[in-house]
Amino acid sequence: MKLTSVEAYRKIEENGVLSKLRLKVFSHISMNPETTITETAESVGKINSISGRFGELEKMGLIKVTGTKLIGATRHNGYSVTGRTVPFDIGTRENELKRAEKLETQAAIKWGQARRIRNKWGSPMPNQMDFFR
Image (cartoon, rainbow, N blue to C red; front, side, top):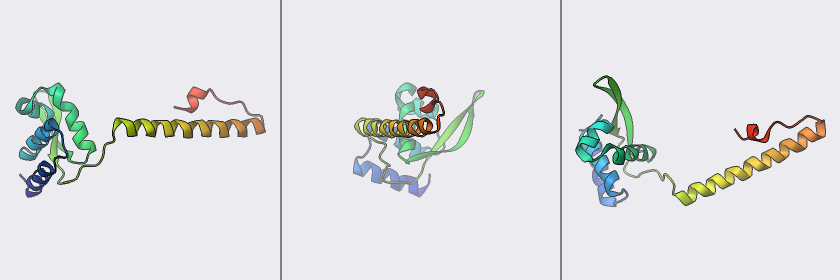
């Protein structure tokens, strides 16, 4: 186990920035580098309750894929701690909804601009749904 993994775990545990389940998953990964979701599930809890925590911890920048392991006939990603002690903000539902609204507004403005240009030059508009893909 790397010294940075231990230090990162201790700081994150002290700061209380992770939920209990995220902290359990993070703790297991820091103690078992290149562990898989399946291996962590055997130690921490049901796979359906912890698999999402891997994605969240990865988005926060606290863990990363560092290899693969062959379990049975299937390859599984192995995860290790990155050494970060402060997670990235993955956004709350409220923030994400505001961001989606802003993107929709920007898309509507661009649609209007495109419509004005095409009308000026006599070119037909594409289907609006194709424009937003």
